[in-house]
Amino acid sequence: MANLKEIRSRITSVSSTKQITSAMKMVSAAKLKRAQDAITQLRPYSEKLTEIIQNISANVELEDNIYAKPSLGKNILIVSISSNRGLCGGFNSQLLKVVDSFVKEKDQPSVNVTVLSAGKKSYDFFKKTEYNIKGNVLPKNANHIVNGTSFEENADIADQIIDAFLKNEFDEIYISYNKFKNAAVQIPTIEKLLPVELGEENINETKGNTQQELDYIFEPSKEDILNHLIPLALRTQFYKAFIDSNAAEHGSRMTAMHKATDNASELIKDLKLTYNKARQAAITNEILEIVAGAEALNG
Image: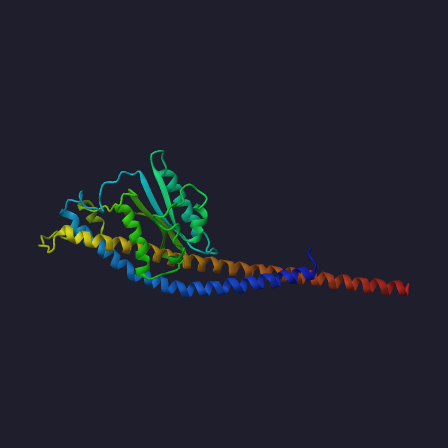
């Protein structure tokens, strides 16, 4: 059994850790409320914008649309959104495991797969691999926009990615992130960003499958409207992924720190019990020594 000084030292250490985890839990809870409000407000707009585009494109031939051109599948880009910091449970490890499996599945002798990391954890994971982005086509990472930025700043990187697709530098572009469900559940998600998949077969996937097809007269033409709305929808989808990931990160960190605080409380309770037992044993030994000494003097 450890001596009393070691047990006291460990109780002090665990108590300090508990204060840190409790503070991190409260900070994440406050940030989660703001992030949750942001994604809750953005999702209806994003879903409605997608619904409008799919309705307009129902009777439009999209083979000539620059955003829906057939994919050769030779050059694939995946944007991996992680966090810059740890201490958030399995938030990063679960996502990176899914992305790594996806990348290895797509990786073929005739296919070039590239990963653009957004977040330090993803960048550290892929920087030593052959998939890490190289060159000056795009930034090597986008860590600065993970912790929450304006739509305009986020759209700058989205525009670079879209331009790279339009210049045929990439045939397919995917985005991976943790989708926020609630504070305890985050869903690793991979979505196809480009080429866009529109048309009549996707209308039934939109919210509310009971919509009625109407014959509207469009001015300007449907093609012009799509060419304007699709880039806006892509920027919104890109921004939504970061907002989703931000909310999921704070939810995961709050849950992890809550569990860590509870574990610290249990550990302190066990250490105090051990300390009391050791203290009682020490007192009993001292009493026995005193009694034995007194009897020796009397004998």
